[in-house]
Length: 121
Image: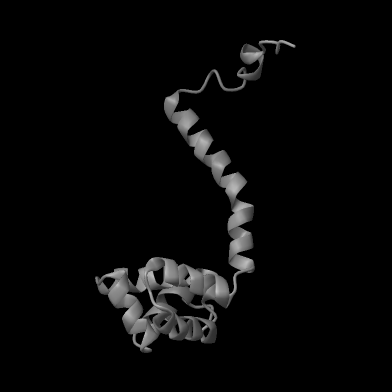
């Protein structure tokens, strides 16, 4: 069975777009497709999932546990604990490993809360 060549018909709504407009359309549609997955990750994460992220970032279990505990305490798991560590590192202009070390010792959570939660505490 040979497939009918209907390319011209299927591309009719796109043929007037230039490369920049096609590029924008592609990323807009990609964002639309991925949005539900991002929302699921935001809504349904857990300490175990976030701990696994930290382990894959190179932290030990001993370092990851207090970071997860503080993240849970401050209701930041939905922000992504890896993101929390990276954000703190960026704010302090330090490596993410040093950032995680500080966060695991309870240092810097006030800065993270201000940055990530803003006025919705």
